[in-house]
Amino acid sequence: MSTETTVPAVEKAPGYAWVVMGLNWARTLFGSILVFGIGILLKGMMQELSFGPAQAGYLSSASWILTAILTIPMTVWASKFSAKLLLTVSIFATAIAYLGQGWAPSYGILFAIRAIAVIVSMAATPALTLLKQQWFPLRQMATVNGIENALGTVGQVIATALTPLLMLWLGGWRGVHYALGAYMLLMGVLWVLFGRENLTETYKARMATQIESPFKALAKYRPIWLLSLGWPGTTLVWIAFFTFWPTFAVETLGIPMTAAGPILSLLPFGSIVASLTSGIISDKIGLRKPLIWIPGFLLPLGYFGMLQTSSVPLLSILSFITGFLAYVFVPPGFTIPYEMPGIKPREVAVGLGLMMSFITLGGALGPIIAGNIYQAVGSIYTALAICCLSPITMGLAGLFLPETGRRAREAAAKAGAGQ
Image 1 (cartoon, rainbow, N blue to C red):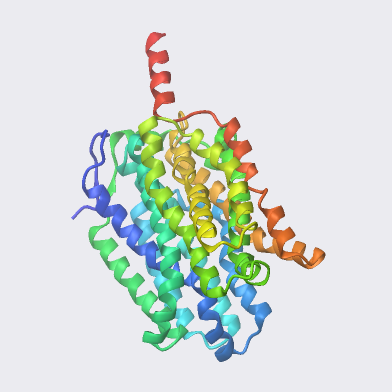
Image 2 (cartoon, one colour):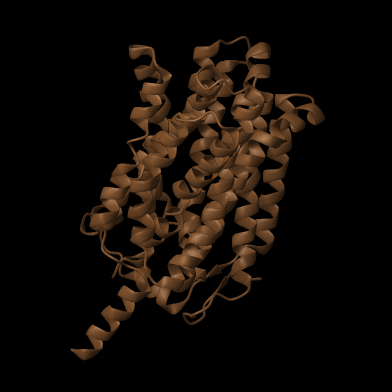
């Protein structure tokens, strides 16, 4: 049976599009456990493999650093291949790497296999970008991105909540890796059986016009560079707060850790709500920019407010609102590259890869900057207060973005028809 179809471009995605995306979302939902649940897994790893805190830090940061460095070259190379083939190879290679981590007899081997797992899993990102362009029209893209980002945040919550139970049920960190490897093998089989590409005539025509390097072509798409430069400020403070705010809450605000943890967990819950609603709102109003620059300027107030009060109810409200603001621009921001006039499918994939490199870099720098300021001045409040300013970069970038939403596209179409 053929795994590809060739149909005309549509204004609404066919029903099977959601099967294709559902398979990929199910794959990534639990795959995040080894990234965001690493802190819970580390204690058992350190005891069994006899390595210290410094090595643990390298093991944890490897995925962030490799993603920041390799996303662009990996995307440029991988986007040349069939999305179905890319995902098939990536999923099965990732499954083998997960199983290999469960087997690893030493720290060096564990680190090497973990690095390999990050690299092979990265090939799935450009494939997913190509699939979305094959199956969904622009008018649905923000909604699709919103669902995807909401599920990504759910994955973070699952990673922190489920990993301790998995360790208990599966006999420790090795069992968790074996279980996730088996799960990924299952997802690979399901993808081979049910995964499809949707090669419309419009899509094939856009691919055929890609005659220059997609990365070189990105030079003419200023909005992608603006988003890439503005976004890291938001991830910097996000990771800094996840790293140091619980300690600040206990030592400075006098809040017990039993309350600080649930308060901080409202950040991703707010983000889930934002991810599920902002794409729909953006599509309804036909605008992208307001949902990007306004949160960029409001976010510093939200984070700074979480440093000013010891009231648990007020902190809970602030945490949820800040989490909402921290993700309300994500679906529109990730949709803008798809909407650039004349952009090719591979250029979209590479553009999103460029953005992800900078986003990940911000996350990697957050705890480093906050930790060094804390150590230099001896005040965790000062360190976090300075980091609170970093989302302004997204506010400034958003102000200079051109509007690419439905209203702008309709206006451009009317202007073209009137010539």
